[in-house]
Each structure stands twice: as C-alpha cells, then as structure tokens.
Image 1 (spheres, helix red, strand yellow):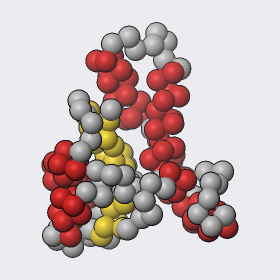
Image 2 (cartoon, rainbow, N blue to C red):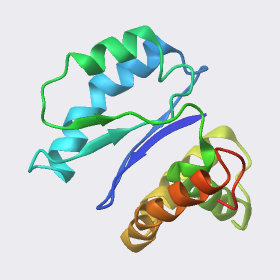
Image 3 (cartoon, one colour):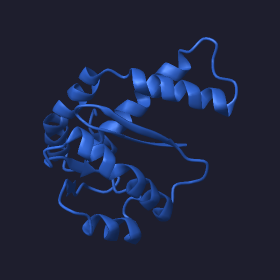
Length: 152
C-alpha cells in the first residue's frame, strides 16, 4: 500500500505503507511531509491541501492537527469518499497500467516498490495539469447527477 501527494506543478513523495493506514499513521505522514512539499510547490502560500476524507483522513487526530497548522496553505474541505472528483484515483490507475505493462513484471514486493517509484517519477507534469484543469468539469458533472456516479 502507498500514500502519495501531488500538485498542479509536481509530484510529491510516494510513501510506502507496511501496514494499513490509520489516523495516527496519516498524521505522522502529514507532519513529516506536508509542510515541506507545500512550501516547495506553493512558496507563495496560496496552496490548497485536499484529501478525500477517507476514514484515516477524517480522523480526529488528523482534523485537529490540520486546524492547528499555520496559514502557509489552506485545507480544502471535500465531500467524503468522492472518487469521481479525486484526481489521485486517475494517477493510481496510470501507475497500475504502467506496472501491468512492465516486462518483465515485478516479482517481489521490493520489485513492485521500485517500479512504482520509477513510474511515479515518470508521470509528466502536463498529465497532472490536465487532471487539475478537469476539476470544474468533474464538479459540474457531479452536480448534474446530484452526487451520483459520473463518467469520471
């Protein structure tokens, strides 16, 4: 299992999780990586941090930590568990296809981790920008179906 972060401008860290993601583990990842990434890609302080409100993301410890952070970025509230509007799902699909197309395929967990890191670094910035720019269309589609499934 992996945790990842990206922005319009760049890919963030790809973190290998050896156990299930819990609220405490998520808080540890945020405290270790979020400020440094946001300060690099949004040095103007105008960055927005978005997560999908999966159970660990919405944990009390994570929510409390995010509320106490300085204003060098904004925490963007997002509907719970809304895959149609979360670009990270598209990125995960791209990684999955890249892994599936590897020859020879990864045979061990360490091989898989190496391939994932390599493919993560190969995702072009234009791909990220296209996904971010698709957000108004994703939200409009979601509103049209009143929160139901969309083609995204």
